[in-house]
Length: 307
Image 1 (cartoon, helix red, strand yellow):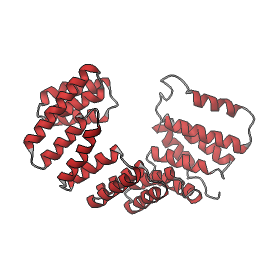
Image 2 (image 1 turned 90 degrees about the vertical axis):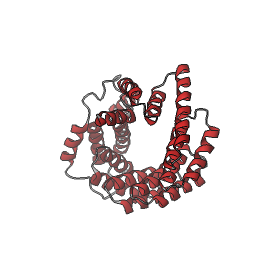
Image 3 (image 1 turned 45 degrees about the vertical axis):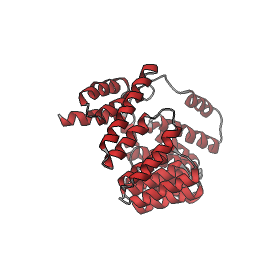
Image 4 (image 1 turned 90 degrees about the horizontal axis):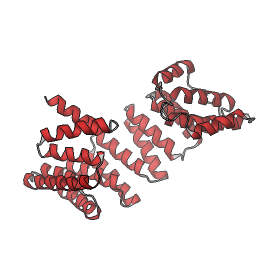
């Protein structure tokens, strides 16, 4: 491998150190997988073996969002075995995680030059390029990934890209092609419903939702989405009934088995029924008890902005 590492390394290291949380090991100490690699790295290894283990450990560090440690491992691995292609892949993913798009694309491109059929690397570069606004290049990567291995990620990525670019026909085609290749994928059907609604193909959107509702054990979220389609089509009384039915189902479910996700859905149903004063305390409790639910935080923020 002749590609040099991204320069200047010390500057990138400082950026990664700043992005690393100070409490990386605050929850339960060093994970067992990392501890096992630590032990192996203390033994006698060849340069190639050590580089492979450092690269593996770096991947685990990235998952833990300990970016500085990951960067240090990958730099050492590259010094030991620059021909080890996986180093470029993991370093590209690391740079993508901290929004260093140019460095991420550089390393992922280097890896793909060696492993052109690596789907995960292709999708990772597509997302980096999309985030940087390089739409045509991102589209090419999503298409290439799908051609190698049709997948939910490739289909959703390409469809989402086309939606952002404002080409709803192309987005619908991407989702339809994904469904043809993968069979019945819930996330693709839901995404297609949204696009068909935006295209004002209301009958097609309702057809897709009705097929999902017929198979689902819990239908409340699907009914809320069905209500949105009906409302967009000007069928307000039917939309209201769907929301009321969804709320009744959620109330019954919550009596049997409380759940933060179901409480969030209940709050959304209340908001859709213009019962904001009831939805507000529900959202407050969800955010307090499940702060990782981004949608709940965003809904609560939007309610506060209205005041």
